[in-house]
Length: 344
Image (cartoon, rainbow, N blue to C red; front, side, top):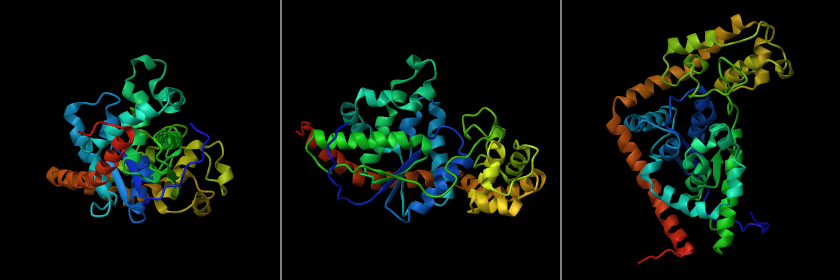
């Protein structure tokens, strides 16, 4: 890191984000990412990829990975991303991501990566058994963002540290290679509620596709009956809903269900409590189930329809990769010139 004030970036604004194809997408992914992508595409030039390079930092079945990429792409489309507006593509189809990541591996400092808390959480007590890719994937994330000179990145709380690393790498590259303002210092883009949805079985744990219990999450491919059943079985407490947000303190399951209702309905937690204050979960859960079914069941139906035509999904991904490379190739060419690579 340097103390030198960064030169301003004068290029166009762009948004970049992606989701790993490593399991079924769920309600948390929809509220925290996909629904926001659909809104953002009309505000900025938007690049949304399927992060298959990131996925293999832990073992993936090669026979399933390609289909999982299609499933994520289908989810993007079913939740409102328009391939004529946003560039939708597989990360591995744009080799400049990996090429820039190597340059950034040589720019980033080991101490910066040692401070990344997600590696510590994911590797646990046996980090020596983790892949090198799991350790360095924040550097690849920086390359994902900066190969498009993205100025804004939708992030949740768990990714803010990685965005700070991206900014550090961008600033150090600009300084090291005497290229002030070449890469932007991207800003976090935080839009609306729903960034953190907790497990339906444990209100203190984040909803996760890696949770062994399918009852802990609502998958985007669940049908109406499955969605309603999971809401009915969601863990709660015996007390009625309070009339203020402060009354949810110490009640993680109640807070989670109120937050889910609010995010799906486009309301605040306070507005939901004003409507349901004093009512028990016997009254609240059926309303939440109806709302969840009305929003999510059509998404699952559209995903299933699109997945029945994989050739069309592949066409959209290929077209998106072509548009992405129109940006990535000249950026990488300029990086090579700045670094001093042999050009032949």
